[in-house]
Image (cartoon, rainbow, N blue to C red; front, side):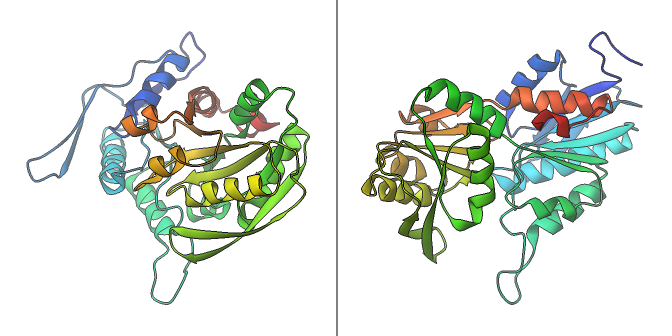
Length: 319
């Protein structure tokens, strides 16, 4: 049955990981989230009770698996199981930030591929489809045995860049060789030049910038990445770019993990500003940091959810 907004039995339910984003998507879609009790027993086991009838409904479960990653992941799995047992027609796991994505291959002997394990868990819990944003590695889509849509935040970033840096003719910079495809895509959308920071990582969480591939002299630069965790890579890259003649440096990243002293590091860095999306809720420290700004992917996610519900094309969002 189709409602006045063209949605056919579309319902939204959410865990506790990112309530502000849920509220924004609900407003975009004109939906009221399904009432559910998602809480902890005294021993910290997750308890979920869906408090409305969802039989035959097209359910979208909103939950980022950001910190605390394991708690949020268990909430997601148990919500999916509860909906499956409540006879929902279809269950789409909407995961704005997919945790464990950086463990996407064996990096040494006797190490796990945790991204594949998490994909298996979500599938076995009863999800029929996955919707996520800017996976750390595109091949993770293949870890799922169910349809998986990986949205790109770049259209949202491009709109912000065109508004905030109008007339500045910025140059797009990849902070490492591994991010060249992402940076090239943004440079193409902005119709501008591309540079690459060549760095050598000495140990996990630390990086040393070696040199800049490309001429950034006299140009404002935009660093583009999918995740900012410790912030070391982007802060070091900004300093190297300025030392190479860049006039100012901005950073655009999809997922603001901000672990450890990342916010302090960014605040003290030479970055003019760092822009992140609301795929992960901003902490008080992030909100208080003068050179960190948040833009919303709620319209992007909301429109993708609407199209999935209506069996319309999702990829055409990025044409």
